Length: 225
Image 1 (cartoon, rainbow, N blue to C red):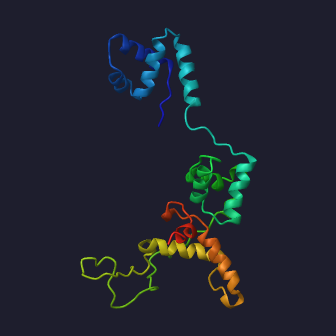
Image 2 (image 1 turned 90 degrees about the horizontal axis):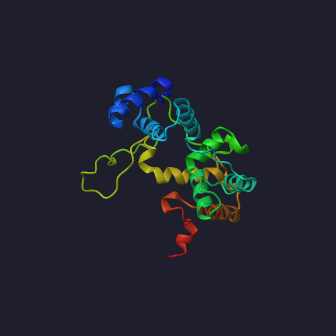
C-alpha cells in the first residue's frame, strides 16, 4: 500500500541526507519506498521549498500509472463486428487489431472493457464459457473401462485416455467443441440442415484464426498440403 508523503517525512529525509545516509538506509529508517525517497532527494538538490517538494511529489503520483485507453468509433465497430458477426474470441480480436495496425490493445484490457460495459461494449456479447460441475458431484461421463489413464504414462502404450471429468486434459478438443456449439447448439437436429449449410459453417470455423496455430487460419494451413 502506498504511504503518502508529509512535510515531516520530507524534513526527516533532508536530515538523513545531510548526514550522508544512502537512499536505502533513509527508506528503511522512515519506512518509505526507495523510489519515493529518491524522488524527494532529487527535488531537494534543486533547492525547492518543502511545500513545493510535497506538491510536486503528489502531482507526479496522480499522473503515474497506465493511461485510460480510449477507442475511436471505427475501432469499436470493428471489435463488435469481429465478435458478433465473425464469432472471434477476444484474444483473436486483439491479435487482429495489432497485426492490421488498428490498435495495440491486450486481451485483458478488452475483457475488462466488456465486463465494465465501457465504450458501449455489452458483456452479454462475450462468448459463453462452460459450467463447472456441482461440488462433490461424481463424474461418470466419458468413463471407459479397462483403458489406460493419461496418468499411466509409464506403461509401454501409444494411446492414453483422458480421465473422466477432466476436460483440461483434452483442451484442444474442448475448444473445438465450444466453437462448433456457437453454430450448432447441443440437441440441434442436423436433419433440418442442408449439406451446403453445414459446408458454410465448416468454412466459417476454418476461416477463424486459432491461438494454437499462432493465430493463423486453419484453411490457410490446409491449403499448404
